[in-house]
Structure formats: C-alpha cells, structure tokens
Image (cartoon, rainbow, N blue to C red; front, side):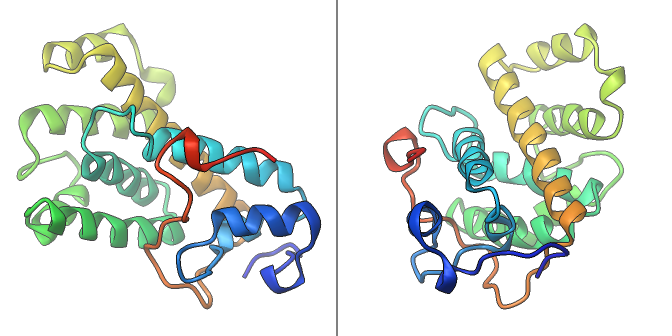
Length: 202
C-alpha cells in the first residue's frame, strides 16, 4: 500500500482513530493516501483541510466538475496514476450529473493543449494550470491578465491556483511514498461536509 509503515483503520486508536472516522467514505473506506499520514496524524488533518477548502468548499464559485478536471489534468501531467484514477472516477460522476459528454472531456484533458468541449474560457484556465504545473517559474502577470481578459475574476483565479497547487502536493505525497490503490474503491469522497462545518482539527 505504501513504502513506509502505516496504521490501518482496524489498528488505530486515540486521535488517529477519531480522525479516520472523520475522513472515511460512507462505506467506511479510508483512502490509502490518507492512511499514509498515519504516523503523523497532524499532517493528515492538514491534508484534509486544504483538500476540502480547495476542492469542496461551498464558497468556491467555479463549477465542481471543472475544479475536478483541473485535478485530473495536474495528476496526469505529474504521472500520478493514483490521483488520476480516483479523480477521473469523481469527474465522470460529476460530468454525468451535469449532462456532459464524459469521454469527450476526458479525452480533451489528454491533449497537449486544451480543446473542445471545454469552452474558450475553460481552455485558458487549463492552459494556466498546465503552465503552473510544468513551468511554474514562467508564470507572470501576463498569465493572470489573460485569465482576467477571458472573464475570470481574481477569486476564480485563486481557485484555479489552489486546486492545481493542492494536487501538486497530493501527487508528490502519493508518488514519494509509493501509495497505491490496493483494496480501494476509486472515486469515493470522505464523508465530511462540503465546507468548514464538517471538518475539524481535533
């Protein structure tokens, strides 16, 4: 499951057991990427806090499916099959709920440059995400001004930035510790709420 030792849910006690119960999926699964934090539970709470804030907070304005697409793109660019698998499953579910063509959107994420069925505005957002992932040192004010010109306000630009940055962190956590999908059901979401109200640092 990982290159380092982990404490599985069945053996957890105290604070770790409490955190596992907070982050488990509805069927009780605790994703392997979360179990990888078990020797330092405080990093698990940190991981979950940024994940929920960046991707699942009710204060976000950009569509959930689009933010999920950002995560899939970053994971694919970083070669993180674990995050790609989990979040592609989630993206499929969200695209279906939005009555969008799952295959077409997923194929577009594999192209060297974003393309239809993403709108021109959405494509520009993905171009920024690709550059931030592959060449962050080349990001400049012109990139931000291009996003503004395409209709993104600064809060939406921040959302793009934070989702891309979160997945860079998650991908490196997974790849650096050898986390795999053994015994997991892909695409489940932790059972905490969609904003601050469902998650605590206790």
